[in-house]
Amino acid sequence: MTPQAILLTAITSLGANKLRAALTLLGIVIGIAAVISLLSIGRGVQDSITDRIQSLGTNLLFVRPGGTIEAGISGGQGSAGSLTLEDAYAIQDPELAPAVKLVAPQLSANGQIVAGRKNTFTQIAGVTPEYQFARDFTLAAGHFITATHVDRSSQVVVLGASVAEDLFGFRTPVGQTVRIQGRQFVVVGVLASKGGGVFGSFDDLVVVPISTVYNRLSSSLTTRGEVSIQSINVQAVDVESMDAAKEQVATVLRFRHRIIGDDDFTISSQQDTIETLEDTTNTFIVFLGTIAGISLLVGGIGIMNIMLVTVTERTREIGIRKAMGAKRRDIMFQFLSEASVLSLSGGSLGLGLGALVAWFLDDRLIGGQPFRTSFSGDFAVLALVVGAGIGLFFGIYPAMRAARLHPIDALRYE
Image (cartoon, rainbow, N blue to C red; front, top):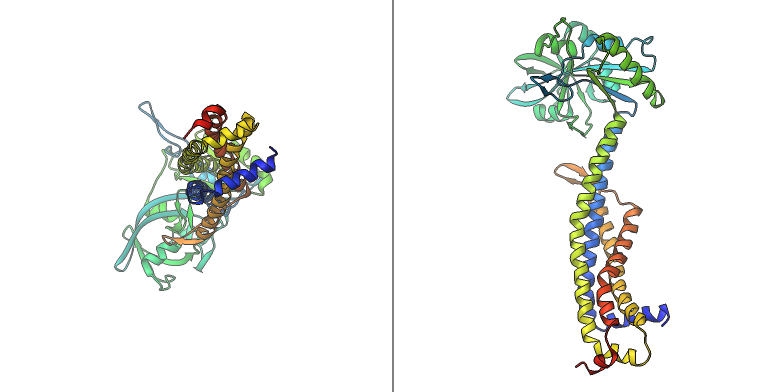
């Protein structure tokens, strides 16, 4: 038989029992649609996280203290007090680090912010004016921390968008006062909403002068009397200068810390963070696809079950075909084509349904946050390939069973 004749016969045979074929088809449709929609959700989460990190700038370096070792127990990155404010000022030297554009030291603390009868517990970031440009923050109202504020250890604060909303609602916070750890601060600005970050929301923080943090809120000094800080944000001149800036910053810190062995600090970039998160989210996407793939397995078993029933019902037909000269491969191709038509049709319909679900969920507000999905062409290829594979894999045994039937026994079957 020609391929066209085999395909036409398969469609005709499936059409003889439309309800059974439709129910079998439904299992594949649901399975493929689940895989496509969940993969689109996973890819959307990955793209959303990557875009948020890249929105902070692709030419950023993060310098953090190394780990500690106490009583033979190693602490994590950032647990050592090896970075100081003086280190940040040294990195700013254009002669020592010409590839560095901006340096923004950061000293963080946590505390309760009180405004009237309302309060919230949030992160307090002690920074310099350069922090706004290094982390690409914009203001919704007022102005940012100034050099004068840092010089005078002024008790002024810039509120994150969600903190401002929690404390003042729809009122204008600028010019109002809040209390941080019992001290009164004047609100001089409100940051524009920036959304969630890798380790939390950029909107759920308040920004104060770095000198105010170590003089009034959370003093942290080294044994030499220098101010210990948690991190230094370094902006390179451009993306091409990232490697040079990283090497120059490391050289300055090694010289200042008199390091001849292992570094007591770590330097990472936005790209390092993106790559790490992509590895993590890829695992997440594969996990989602595996979970959805279980429904595909069930659909495939449904195809095998129906094809076995079909072989039993059409035993006499198989005997007649063989008596008239049909070969084993003709019988096998006949039943394989029926299984493949079912699975490919289900794959195509499931692809359309999954893409529709992904489109419907894209940019929908769920829990007050925009939900993002990302459908791509490789998902379409995956759906069709998997659909064809299911048909071949689960249809091969019924087809072989049909092909092995002896024509005389088949003709005698009642």
